[in-house]
Image (cartoon, rainbow, N blue to C red; front, side, top):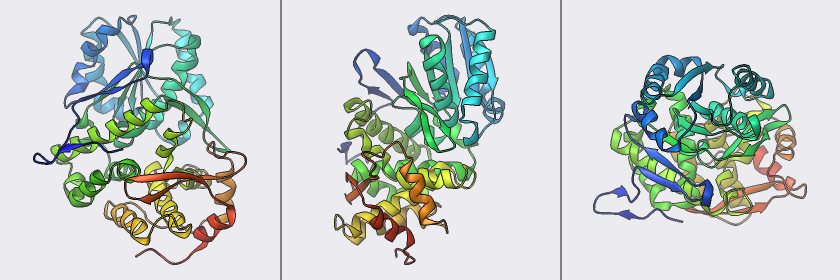
Length: 376
């Protein structure tokens, strides 16, 4: 799949409104600067009840909470802001229960709306809570981190982590709308911004070789947050994600390509206790490992892994495995929700812009995990 371009303009042929086509559950992803100040008016057509909970974390609340509340109040909604701690360890049943208790305490009804204002943790937790409160209430994604804007806010995957693995408890539950204001990236810590670029690189590898080439050529502009480059990154990534989800909502087959880099990435997060790595950092390492596996299995030549590692390290992301036990990583992979018939499946790039999904035997995985030779 390629997002086709007008090469004379050097911009992607996608606009600021991208449709996730799922029949009666379809919704739009809107990407515009200054969108935080228009959230209220964009929710009016949905005829929601006045009760609205803005779920966020303290830092995002400080930066953007007042703007969002002002926008919601301007159209007659009655927002309440609920700030919960930041970080992957908050993605737990404990914090879901806290959110549900607050909704119940306020006696909110089925027309109440949850607005997820924050990164992937907030979006996943808010979506999960919305999906199970009164058997489902509306929710809206307002992602403020790059990884949430280009990936986790789109597609309806919600959920929390378990001690045995990442995202093992959750639902498929689509938002009413995804509203992306690229301006929020200006307050994002550089490490978190770079981590989000791992998911962007992923899209180039799995579906769009020209987009990958654009990333190779213009990464310096992207890292400097130049508006035109950032808009192209977000809109192209969202268009690819929307197309994949529209074709396969519940990860029956094709959607599994979005897991490129995540088999090892999730294992690294689990083994590290969700403390050592940002999600994108772990995915970056996982993409390189998957490319090396593809090379070892004869699916790809060495240039594929080399280009992926070169781009990730140029982005400021890790490209090599840290000194973890291969056995611990494999054990974590066995718990991953992508395991089928007790076999570990990998998304493997056979070339830039195309991947295949294959089960890989553990001796092959162990060989790559224990190899000391870096890719050059």
